[in-house]
Length: 170
Image 1 (cartoon, helix red, strand yellow):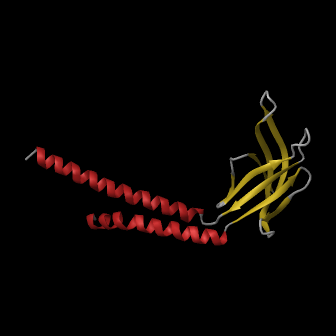
Image 2 (cartoon, helix red, strand yellow):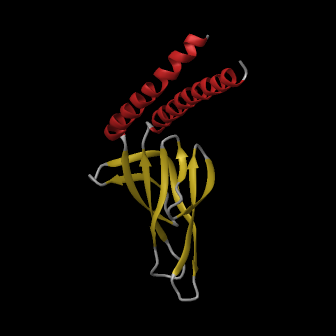
Image 3 (spheres, one colour):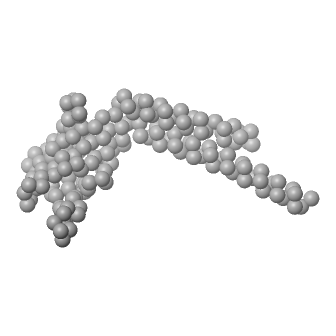
């Protein structure tokens, strides 16, 4: 058992680094970012990438409401859009704020980018979907590195304690 732990302690960080590198390479090949304009009247499941590619997602999004708070000076304090997401005849209302993405699914983060600030009752907002199917592989690599480092540290602490005990209690 001791040999297995010593072996794992050495190999786990290396496997973790390899997983992170693989996730980054595959992620750069397969990930995409797409924007969509959500209206209060229409559903959409189409996102347009920077390269003008059309990406279709398995859920339909509609803008339900936008709540904008202002400071006394008139500057925008916070923006929160409420998005209806419909998938397989189930509708869920998603609160979406700037810089606070919502996880639409594994490897799919939805961001609020902009909104209709020209009217008192906004009728549209712009959202961005970031799709990266290899987020889990990347996270697994980080976890393996942490576990490997903890095993190394635990062994170092154990050796230090053993040495102190031997030196003081001969």
